[in-house]
Image (cartoon, rainbow, N blue to C red; front, side, top):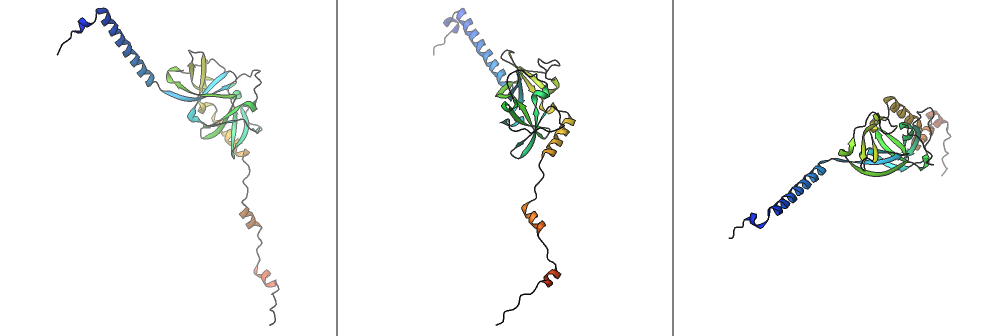
Amino acid sequence: ILLMDESLLFSNEEMEAISQIREEQETEKGNRRKEADIAEHQYVVFSVENEEFGLPIERVKEIFKTRDITPVPKSAAFIKGVTNLRGTIIPVVDVRERFGVAETETGQTDKDGKVLVTLIKDTTVGLLVDNVNEVLRIGENVIEDAPTLVLSNVDAGYLQGIAKLEDGNRIILLLEIQEIMTKKEFKDIAKIKETALPEPKQPAEEKKKGTKKTITKKQQEKKPRAKKKKE
């Protein structure tokens, strides 16, 4: 067995280079571990005018193109109306109106928009938006608390945070969906659903039972008896 002296195999400069490579490898491994430890969440990203919003994907039940929305008299300005979704009446909230997003001359109309169906405090509600852009994974390391003065007209009370992507060039406002309406507004929505529901139809069997005539014993006695045929 030949025992080798590694100090004689490499020069001092070569040993320093090897040590530096090892340090860089260890640093890279550490960065990968940190990246793996950062929690990510999926958001449905939608837009209203030039503002982008994010809603946790587990909050979105489904998305559909805008259909017939029936206005409800004496309802709040942000309630666009109600729509029938496979037999279920749901109120539709106009996100633009709710958040006070200024309207620009984009030619966008309600018919061009999308409706996100979500559950807010056990109430199914539709959110009318301009467009649904994508489903995006957002790491917690790029999410900041919503400041009192946000870079938009949206009240910070409606937000859970702000995601800054692409070196801060793209801002996504992350919604706290449970806070977009007051208790009174939720009660009003519940009333809207009740008044918009059609009256229950009486089953056909019950109708028949209700119209069936009853014959008393006296009426049976008055009926002429059939004469027996003579043999």
